[in-house]
Amino acid sequence: MTGDAVGGRRAVVEAIRAGGVLDVLVAPGVRETQGLRAVVEAATTAGVEMRETDRRELDRLAPDHQGVVARLRSIEPPREIGERDLAGFPFAGDALVVVLDGITDPQNLGAAARSAEAAGASVLVSRVRRAADVTPAAVRASAGSLLHLPHARVANIPRALGRLQDAGFTVVGLDGDAPISIFDEPCPGGRVALVVGSEGEGMSRLVRERCDVLVALPMRGRVGSLNASASLAAALYGYVLPSRRT
Image (cartoon, rainbow, N blue to C red; front, side):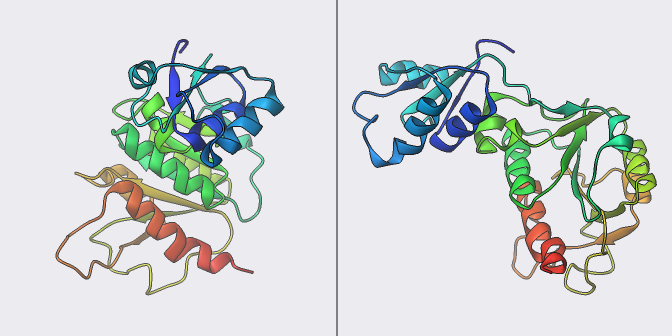
């Protein structure tokens, strides 16, 4: 997708590092500020031109831009892969894969990708249909993670989970009705695929049936659930990563 742009300091830095940036536009007077130092350094290293422009132009290109916008040649992830590629992907022995079943909001997709990448996930898996696309808003919400994290867009999530199971993954699904919580039992060792469903419906029936383990997040307050990306972050840092500290 040509002619797109991404705003925000961290997202712009990651976009520059990933390549594909045409130029960087900054608001008048912000180039020398402390907050933009990382952007200036990344642009200088990559040989990307920076120039000042009116804030109204930045507003038009990207909302919530923090005074800086990168215009992109492409916003597609550089390493998008397909379902069949999962079987031959060079996964480590303790690899983590995050699977999104029906996440339709680009902001949620981006936030989930940011949590997945921060937790060391090898691949992000999501649907091709009835799911959020990688848009500038998603890239912004991911703080640029979608420009680095390999992303498998698949037509059939249960079938993709089967491929991961054939590759030695234990598939763990987050399910509010699961009989055990993330605190009741440790996360399985080895390769783990963590599945998160949509906010409204959760995982589909076929995806739930494909899971090896179902776990719930304990909800102690009046709110009955978290959004998908928040649930993912809680499960990654409260369940998956503690078992991998060694």
